[in-house]
Amino acid sequence: MQKTTIAILGAGAWGQALADLASQNGHEVRVWSRRGSATLEAVISGAEIILSAIAMKGVSDLVSQVKSIPLSPNTILVTATKGLDPQTTSTPSQIWQIAFPDHPVVVLSGPNLSQEIQESLPAATVVASENTAAAELVQLVFSSPIFRVYTNPDPIGVELGGTLKNIMAIAAGVCDGLHLGTNAKAALVTRGLTEMVRIGQSWGAKTETFYGLSGLGDLLATCNSPLSRNYQVGYQMASGKTLTEILAHTAGTAEGVNTCQVLVQRAQQYTIPIPLTQQVYRLLQGEITPRQALEELMLRDIKPEYHY
Ligand SMILES: NC(=O)C1=CN([C@@H]2O[C@H](COP(=O)(O)OP(=O)(O)OC[C@H]3O[C@@H](n4cnc5c(N)ncnc54)[C@H](O)[C@@H]3O)[C@@H](O)[C@H]2O)C=CC1
Ligand SMILES: O=C(CO)COP(=O)(O)O
Image (cartoon, rainbow, N blue to C red; front, side, top):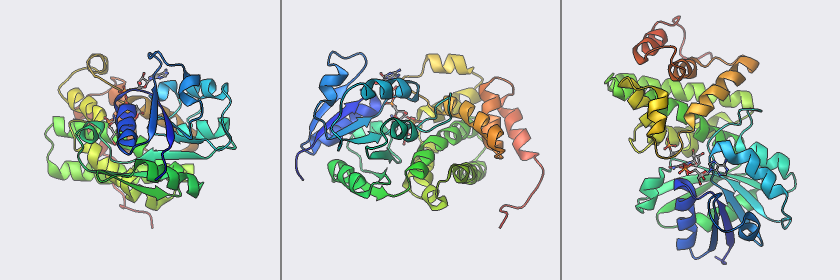
């Protein structure tokens, strides 16, 4: 394909991996980091695609900074952040789209542990947008023999899959850390997916999106890999460490911690049942031990698996 100019905002593990994938495909890639020497203006000037891969806590501020810089009207905005805004409970793509109503916004999300991608191991991802042409361009830019990219028309569903699975990955880490066995893990991941679907429906996401790469796919990757920072948080909590101790020694961002708090707030507002998320929340708050969280989940009122 034609050489494209891409600005990657965020030089963390994920921003760097995505920058390398685009560079390997021959595109002109410029990376901006808040600690780097290049200005934001210089990095995004003339870029056809601006991709943000920063942590959730910086998204609103970054959006305001980008908004103060004139962009070409065709510039495509891509978000690869997996989190929720604590003030508004909005997703990153919603924040970008509200600030740039006339620009196409694309969500990039999938089972993509950055370390494996940096080792050139094969992976697949999803680029989702209401603007099909924008999603197809981003698909072309990143597709390679080691990175298979699918398009999808449900950006909110794709984004929520990647965001909500982080809470389940914390729970899966606890499950493995307590050596609860394969049956327990299967039950947790399956009921976790049911909870993700329920939350997604309240946001207007399509149910089937959660059964794809960005939902079930990312759930499986993150709940089963010690490379996941969220899984590590749960695993270490099972050994009795406090959240503060764990985060002090965690390299990188475990978004599930913040997402869990925001989701509890949103679930109260919209009356969404979120039993697993509630227990992860209470555990992270230091209100209960991992064993107590397990007991409370197992002793809930018995009920049908589905309400058909
Ligand atoms: N590492 C991975 O395997 C994957 C990560 N993600 C998501 O990508 C996002 C970034 O994750 P990582 O790169 O792994 O984290 P990281 O901790 O390695 O890097 C975070 C980046 O965000 C920047 N940042 C943090 N606060 C900021 C602020 N206030 N203003 C501007 N920049 C700020 C940091 O400078 C850094 O460049 C997260 O939402 C994560 O869930 C998504 C897919 C895979
Ligand atoms: O989102 C990820 C894989 O798709 C990365 O997971 P962690 O943020 O838990 O490391």
